[in-house]
Image 1: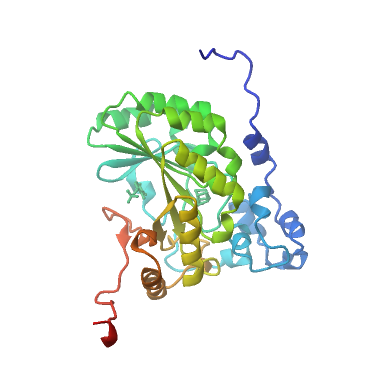
Image 2: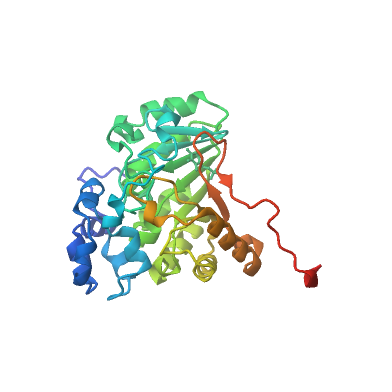
Amino acid sequence: MITANPLPAQPRRWQTLWRQAVRDPRELLSLLGLESLAGRISAAAAAQFPLRVPHGFIARMRPGDPDDPLLRQVLPVIDEERIAPGYDLDAVGDLAARGASGVLHKYDGRALLIATGSCAVHCRYCFRRHFPYGEETAAANGWRQALDYLAADTSLSEVLLSGGDPLSLATRKLAELTDALAGLPHVRRLRIHTRLPIVLPERVDEELLDWLTRLPQQVVVVVHANHPHEIDGSVRQALLALQGSGATLLNQAVLLRGVNDDAGTLAALCERLFETRTLPYYLHQLDRVAGAAHFEVPEAQAIALHEALMRRLPGYLVPRLVRERAGAPYKVPLTAPGSVAISPASV
Ligand SMILES: *Cc1c(COP(=O)(O)O)cnc(C)c1O
Ligand code: SF4
């Protein structure tokens, strides 16, 4: 029998690790022996979207390597100050897609709940770096408006928990939400979009697994790793544990210049993911968000990389290359028309 605990909840180990995350760019550089890179830091970028990275993720960076692909994803640099035409504050039309407070309803049959604005790591390329989370999280008003919206639209069979990172909420909070969702019989699937199992695998603790195991809906967990170095032993263990709770595991990655823009790295990521029984789902072409232009991989090169993956990997390990277009009814696949090159020898 479970009895209510009258005492204030003790902070969990993951919450302590969360709080200990590095927030000072100079401290990060000094941990990596890269003090000489200080001139690359942008105070303006760090003020707009502060650095945040947990120690466990830093431990997977290579000390002394100024081009480390994990470091590049988190360090606020002067490149972000460049004004690039076409790079906006609301790159994917989120502000127009609000169905209710904290709900984004863009596609048929599924709606996305902005469960929280918090993340354990701040990714420089993130399309939500300018989003007004303060006003827009569904938790802010006790989920009420969001739940009313989801209850009223019985064409919704799937609810996505996103953010921010939904697993940054305490498990008890998540359980309140899913208890309420359990009362909506048309919502058969629950999808959780989270980077926490990758950047802070300690988040996958007994309490979380217990919650997941008890959920009445089918559960899909979509994690977010961009480079094979992000997946170390602790991440592997966390992903396998999530599997053990009955969830289906998928990964989404963003194609990023200087991080994963070569076929060998992408193929290694896909194979590494499969070692944790996680299937590559989407490879996103960068959303054109202000401050992220230096991460863009030209579309023709993206298509060529994707084609290289199709050549060298089994079909089930090739993610779909997509771009989000404001107003489109789904994530739009990128392909070059008539691009399949068949050499005479293989006909
Ligand atoms: C990406 C996204 C989804 C999910 O799209 P899928 O193609 O089903 O993965 C749903 N809602 C919103 C608002 C999204 O941005
Ligand atoms: S964890 Fe996801 S939502 Fe958070 S900053 Fe990174 S990409 Fe954006």
